[in-house]
Image 1 (spheres, rainbow over the protein chains, first blue to last red):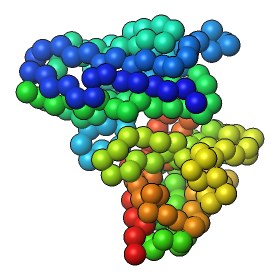
Image 2 (image 1 turned 90 degrees about the vertical axis):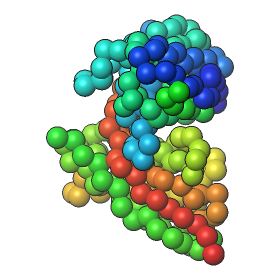
Image 3 (image 1 turned 180 degrees about the vertical axis):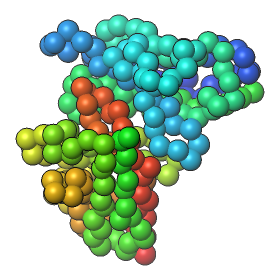
Image 4 (image 1 turned 120 degrees about the vertical axis):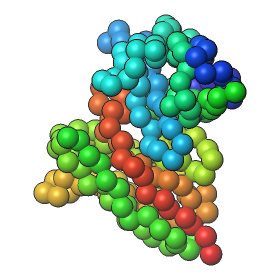
Length: 112
Length: 116
C-alpha cells in the first residue's frame, strides 16, 4: 500500500498568519491516465471530514480561496494564506491513484 | 441536495454483530462507488470496505472475512454487516461516495463501541 506521510503532525498558528502542511507519498501518484489523485480533507472538531481539494489543487465549491494545494510526483503541500479561527481542526491528505486509497496520519492545526 | 445518513451503531459485546446503514439521497448508490471509512477514537482515517458500481467488493485485511458490504437499490442504501466484532473495531464509521478517485460526500458517522 502507498504510505502517505504528513508533516508536521501538530501545527500551532497565530491568527492571520500562513500555514503549510506537507504530504509525501511512498511512490509516485501519477496515474496511468496522467492525473494525480491527491486530495485534502478538513475535519473540524466533532464533524465529519470535508473535502477541500482534489487532484492536487482543485478547490471544492464553498472552500475559501485562502486554501491552496500544490505539488507533483510524491510531494504535495496544502497552504492556508491567513489562518482564521474556523480553520482549527485536523487536515488529512489522501491518495486515490493506487488501490487501496490511503490517508496521511493527519495534521492538527490549532491557534497559538 | 446530497445527504448520507448512517445509522445502526451502538455498544456491542466482543464477538457480536451489527449492521450499519447509510441512507443516501441526491444520487443513486448503485451507479456510484461507495466506501466505508472508520476512525478509532483520537485516531486517523482508515478505509474499511468498498463497493463499485458493478457490485465488486473489497475489504481491508483487518476486516476481511468478518465484514460484508452490500447495497439495496430500491432503498438507495449502503450497508455494512459486521460480524465477530473485536475491541479494535471500536470506531466512528463513515460512509462516503468515491467519485473520480476521491471522497466527495460523507455522512455524519455512526459510533460502534465493542466492549464487554
